[in-house]
Length: 428
Image (cartoon, rainbow, N blue to C red; front, side, top):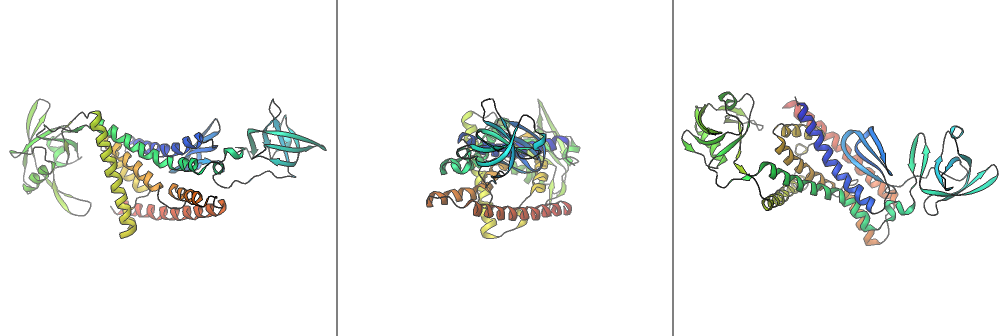
C-alpha cells in the first residue's frame, strides 16, 4: 500500500513533467502571437479552472497528459451565420464586446438583431439588422461569443495558429519536448547536488537503504552505516565485492564491520535466500549500497548532468529501436497503472531517487512526443516540414483525420497496455 507521501510525490512528478511540456507549447505560442484558448493538465471532466488574460487554465480528472489548445490549430466551426438572430453588448467605445447566441430575451443592456453580414477573422466587423435598421459595428479583437453558458474568444486571423510562419509554428510544437529535455537536465543537476559524487579517497561503501523485515534490519544495521569489511576482508569501494562476499558465505553468518558516526561496530548478519523478479533466488542481507560521496563542484555537476542525459536518452532510444525493429513485446511497455506502480516504488526509496526517476520520465515523454505518430508532436512537425517543402499548407480536414486515427490507435494501445499492467500486478 502506498503511503500518503508516496502518493503526493507521484502526483507531483506527473504534474511537473506534464506542466513543463505544455508550458513550452504555451509560452512559444504566446510569443508568436497565437491565441492559446486553454492550458490543460489531464483530460476529461474539469476539476478546477480559472481564466487569466486570454487563457483558461484547467485541471482535469484523468492524469493521462495535457494540452495547450491554440486558436486555429484545428478547424474551428464558425457558429454565427447570416440570417441568425443574436444579441450584442457594446463596450464604451462602441465596439462589440460580447456576442450572445442564446437566451437572448434574458440578456440585459444588449442590442438584438439579425445578422446581415459578419467577418470575425479579417475585418472584425458585422452588420446587424435591428428593427429594420442596419447597424454597422466593429468587433473588439478580444470579444467573446457566449453560448450555453460558455465563452469563446474570437480569434482574428493573425492570432490563429495556421496564420503564422512554418518556423514559428514548428517552434511552438517542438518547445514541448524541448522543455522536457531542459527539465531532465536541471533535475540531473539537482540530483548530483543532493546526492554528491563518489569520493575517490574512500575505502568503504555506504548503506543507502534497509529492506523492511530483512536480516540487516533484524541485526541492527542502519542507513548511513559505512561498511569497511566482511569477515575481515576489506571491501574498498567495490559494491560488487560486498555481494560476492555475502554469497560466498553460503548462508552462514557473516560479520560486517561498519562505522557509525565515531563508532566502529562488528555486526553479525545471517543472509537468507530472497526471490528475485525473474524467479531466481539469491542470498541477501537486505541492504542497498552506494558509494561514499562528497559535494559536487559546479563543473562536476554539469558534467554529470550531461553524461546522465546522454546515457538516459541513448537507453530509451535503444529500447524503442528494439521494440520496433527487433521484437514487439507489450510487456516492455508501461501504461499509467504500471508507471504509477513503479513510481510508487521509486518514491519509497527517497527523494534523490525520485528526482532521478522524474528526469528519466521527462526524457521519455520528450522522446515519445517526437515520434512520427499521428496526434503526437513529431507527426505535427512532419506535416509542417511537408508544408515547407511544397510551399502550401495541407488540407486541415485531411490532417485532422490523420490525427484522429492516430489518437484512436494510441487510445486502443493504452487500453491494452493498462490491461496488461493490471494483470502483471495481480500475477505478481
